[in-house]
Image 1: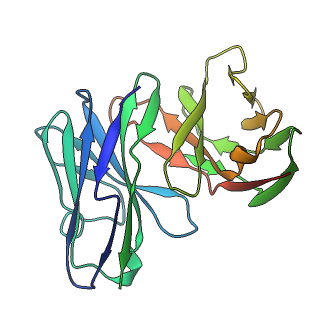
Image 2: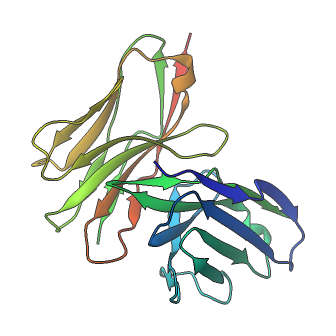
Amino acid sequence: SAVISQKPSRDICQRGTSLTIQCQVDSQVTMMFWYRQQPGQSLTLIATANQGSEATYESGFVIDKFPISRPNLTFSTLTVSNMSPEDSSIYLCSVEGGYTQYFGPGTRLTVL
Amino acid sequence: AQKITQTQPGMFVQEKEAVTLDCTYDTSDPSYGLFWYKQPSSGEMIFLIYQGSYDQQNATEGRYSLNFQKARKSANLVISASQLGDSAMYFCAMRVVKAAGNKLTFGGGTRVLVKP
């Protein structure tokens, strides 16, 4: 199974600012996924990040708001830009491992 | 489009008893995978069990078993001998196997509270 770490684990931010979340995997993976979980809700996919190409965003998510970088096969970042209280969520990165999909520990973001 | 439905928002279960969490899915693709994840209050997503659409046997992993009824499009999770540490949110998810972008689609989740 893949071991995934995320930084920061949690943060409290002011509205209008941006936060970059890092995701590190202990093995090379082709695709990395970024999910958002709003309070009391299920997980929703934000985008899929392949190394060396633009991320593919799901409906309702745009690159200007959630820019993603994927500089190599073990690392990715998600930036939450111009934050508002509605962005308060847990953000999780995920990778495929064999037949299943593993998740990082999540970044708990609170926007004031 | 794929859809996952979990109709039980919350459940109580007595310690040491078994509990069944319901999950129904909808897809027109013949090749797909079904997953169950546990999310404790810490927020991490813990993979529990997987069932492929072509698997003949129901999946089992320790105290977890998946009751896969393909014709009914259901994939219920059974937790046997519940423990206090099983108290958490449980999510059913589906992944359709495609050439690219094998994303997971999640159900709304079921909160389980194990009573001593």
